[in-house]
Length: 165
Image 1 (spheres, rainbow, N blue to C red):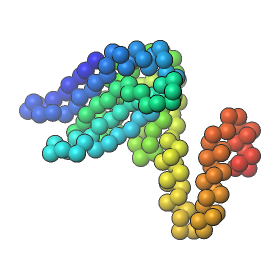
Image 2 (image 1 turned 90 degrees about the vertical axis):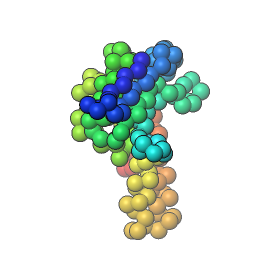
Image 3 (image 1 turned 30 degrees about the horizontal axis):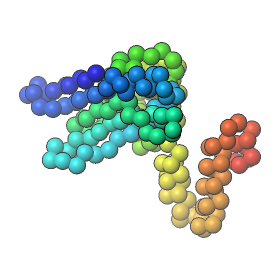
Image 4 (image 1 turned 90 degrees about the horizontal axis):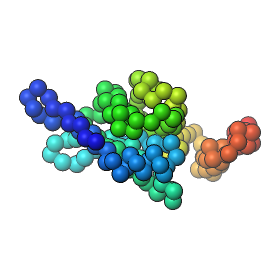
């Protein structure tokens, strides 16, 4: 599936691509878990790449869909998610994991009903390091980060309280 949107002057604005093999693989071989990310495409056109990836059976990155946009903003993320929903055509809940910097003014659940949204653990840790770096010693910071990782990876809520309680 591909969708191209141009401006009134026929200049490039948005491009969404999701291959049928990727859609089939996600629906039939991956957990309903999608990671959303963005990166700058280094070229003379100053474009941005929006991605939706999953994890395959070997915990490897499985590309599901991507979009090339002229600028990363809430409207373009919304458009990407609407295109993604149309391409996936699934009705089961999906959990989305995104960088904390990706601000969604319109919740993902408005597009994907009964979905869940979480933040990337790596980015949360990086933010925590930045926030605590000036007020904690390196040893204290490492203990906090270790407990944070352990709490996030706990398989039961009671276990997570052991690390943060």
